[in-house]
Structures are given as C-alpha cells and as structure tokens.
Image (cartoon, rainbow, N blue to C red; front, side, top):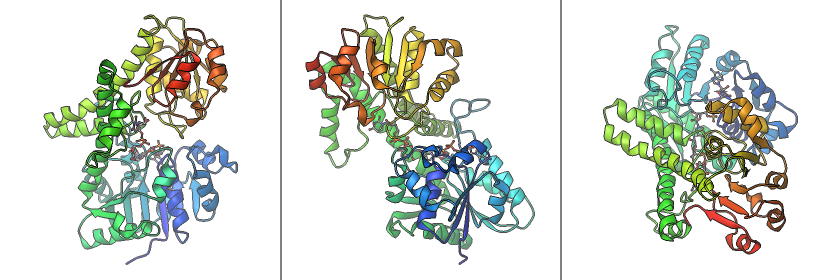
Length: 464
Ligand SMILES: NC(=O)c1ccc[n+]([C@@H]2O[C@H](COP(=O)([O-])OP(=O)(O)OC[C@H]3O[C@@H](n4cnc5c(N)ncnc54)[C@H](O)[C@@H]3O)[C@@H](O)[C@H]2O)c1
Ligand SMILES: O=c1ccn([C@@H]2O[C@H](COP(=O)(O)OP(=O)(O)O[C@H]3O[C@H](CO)[C@@H](O)[C@H](O)[C@H]3O)[C@@H](O)[C@H]2O)c(=O)[nH]1
C-alpha cells in the first residue's frame, strides 16, 4: 500500500482549519497544506499573533502553534497544493442555493465543482479525493464524472469523510470523536484508499471508532445526523410552547425524558431556536433531495423541523413585544449575545439575527453586546437580510463592547446566546441601570431566576 506523505485541504474555514491542524498534530510525518482563494483568511491563519486567527475555537491556537510552519502550511497557491498532494480534502462551503432551481433549499455545489475541475486540470499523478464538505447523497458520482473526463490517465479514488465537529468544541470533538466515518468504493483501489484514510485517523482514534461504509451511506449519514439533531431541538422547542400554556417546565421535562436511556439526555435544551451554518442548510437540502425523488411525505416530515424553528424565533420576539405593553417602538432592547452558540464568533443563521429583524420591523432600538462578535459582522448579518436599509440598521442598532453599557437605559434585556459570563454579571448593579419595570427575556434559560426575581426583575424564560 502506498504511503500518504502529503495532504492538501482546499478550504481554510471552520472545518478545514481545525481538522487539518489536528491531523497535522497527530501525523507529524505528513505535510499538510491548507489552501484557500481567500487571501485575507490565509493571511490571518499565518498571522504571528495567534489571537488573530480567523476562527475562534478553544484550544485551536495551541494546536496551530505546535504545527504551523512545521508540517502545517496555509497558502493561496491552490494549484501547487493539489500538485504536491497524495490525498486532497475538499472542505469548501456548500451553502443553500440563493438562485435558480432549488433556490432556498438545495445545496449550492458550485464551489465543489470548481474544486473538482481544478483538481482535474492540475493533477499529473493518482490522487485520493476526499469529500469533507457536507454534500447531497450521490455527489461523489458527479465528482467522479468531472475528474475522470480529463483523459490524462490520472486515477482518482473518491472517498466521503463527513465532519461531525460542532463549533465551540471543535478541537475536543476532533481529538475525541464519537466516530470517524469513511465511505468509499468496495473495489480493491477503493478499499486501499479507505484504509489509507483510516490510517491517518488511527494515529489517535481507536480503530473500532473508525467506520467504513459505502460512499452513499456515508454522504447520507451526515445529512441524517444533522436532521436527527435538529429534530430533537425542534421537538423540545415544540414542547416549550405547550409548557408555557400549562405551567409545565420544559427543563424538568427534558430531565425526565432524558433519563430514559432510549431517549438520552443530550441535545434537549430548549432555546430561542437553533442557528449555525449547518442545521437549516442540511435539513433543507434533505427536504430538497426527498422531493426530487418524489418522496413528498418524507420531505414534509423534515420540513416541519425548520418550520418549528422559525416559529420559535418568532415566538421569542413576539413575547418581548407582548410583554412590553404590545409595543417596542422607540424602546431600547439590549441583546446579550449574537453568536449562534457560546464559545464561537460564528453568527451564521444565528437566532439573534432573526429576532433583531423582527424587532426592527416594530421599530425597536437594539443594543448588542457579544464577547466575540464584531460590530462589522452584526451589521453585515442584518444587511444581508435586505429587509431594512443599511442607514436604518445603523441608526437603530448599536453595538457596544461593555455589557453594562448595553443595558444602561434599556427597557428590556434579551439573552440570545448562552455565554457563561452572562450568568455571573453584577445583576444588582444592572437592575439599577435599566428602566423599570425591569424585564429579562432569557432565550437560553441560563440565568438564575430566583436571584433575579429577588432583585426585582421580571423574567420570562423559554418553556416555563
Ligand atoms: N462549520 C461547521 O461546524 C461544519 C461542521 C461539519 C461540516 N461542515 C461542512 O463543511 C463544509 C465547509 O464548512 P465551513 O464552515 O468550513 O465553511 P467556510 O465558509 O468557513 O470555509 C470554506 C472555505 O472554502 C473556501 N473556498 C471556496 N471555494 C474555494 C475554491 N474553489 N478554492 C479554494 N478555496 C475555496 C472559502 O474561501 C472558505 O474560506 C460545508 O460543507 C459545511 O456544511 C461544517
Ligand atoms: O440542546 C440544544 C443543542 C443545541 N442547540 C442549538 O443548536 C445550534 C447548533 O448547535 P451545535 O449542534 O452544538 O453546533 P454546530 O456547530 O452547528 O454543530 C452541528 O452542525 C455541525 C455541522 O454539520 C455538525 O458537524 C455537528 O455535529 C452538529 O452538532 C446552536 O444554535 C445551539 O444553540 C439548542 O438550542 N439546544
């Protein structure tokens, strides 16, 4: 069996960066080149100041410090990266299509196709091409067709190796994965490619956790995993609405059902709604795929997961309005948190964006504090929706770097992200700075209700 000495990863994003950094750390004999067309991102990855890496992930800077410019390199030279590599990971973005057929549902595969074309154009010797991006089932077929049409005698073996890391815990998830999934052909060369990739992971992952399947199962397992995870959140969020009508407590319900080992305790935290770059995109993609095979009932089933999530975000904003004497016009609503979850600076599809948009429709003023998200990012997120003019957004939305400044003169405080620091703020001091009656809307159920009520706050939770 040939040995893998050089890996190229196309795409230096939230997946490519951390994943390759860990592969490089655990395989010091392999040279890992991460390439990207985004020069600014590559410059940031190469920045001497590790605080300026383009992605914030606990533990990431330490891994990069140990590997960068030893056996891990970041570059914009995509061609060279491809040429030198024995194995090429494609880890580019696969967002929801915003145009044409499948708009709003299907995954946009133009970046994947571009990568395949570039590999086909540049490669002069046999390569193993690994799908790391999350892709619709049967994408490997399209990749194969592009790669094998070069006629230059180069053989490409295509593997699917979806990534299951969650942001905020990426390094821990990569170091201790529940499983690594590798899909490929059952031909002798397919098996050899699967074993070579398994070998890279087995440098630190126990062999029994490295699972090999056929390529279609691997591609579809990734969409299935995200659909099941998103469905759990929508299920508990559906119950949260019912709890609010019946005096049942959604956290108590989660604890009660989570102790049933068939259900399990994880991923049952009711919230303002799930965000992130993956759940919505991947469930919508699943809906589109099911529809395209004529499986309308299957498509409708999964579509409800998204509909319920939209309902939950809207319900949270509506609750703020309803409990503010039915109007937030001209009122100051302080947002604690903008990221889609704690321990990340990623805001893609964050519930905060949609809650803010709904409150802007009602002419609220919003003051945002998030420990990791920049003002630039927050304005860009709102402008991307195209529902309010950039001028109106800048007039109505203020972003501050101090949590106490955010709430000074606020009519209400809304917790949108579960950052730990929010719990330990000086809430007695905050009480003095906000307008009365002092209202908190905790979209993450993290604050200590008893303590806050004693201070004088009125607090509205999810599902209580
Ligand atoms: N973010 C996550 O937590 C996560 C987890 C598991 C899987 N995924 C999947 O992994 C894939 C990548 O996600 P991400 O969050 O890392 O995306 P990202 O947007 O952070 O990074 C993708 C990078 O690919 C680069 N790129 C695009 N086309 C290119 C090309 N032709 N040549 C070179 N570079 C190119 C972009 O410039 C960008 O820097 C997606 O399919 C996503 O669904 C993401
Ligand atoms: O009980 C829960 C768990 C999560 N969330 C929310 O759900 C969203 C997604 O959270 P999480 O799954 O932890 O983060 P992601 O980084 O989006 O990771 C998901 O998406 C990735 C991209 O595909 C997959 O690799 C991961 O396995 C999958 O967990 C966030 O807004 C969370 O706040 C809840 O509301 N309640």
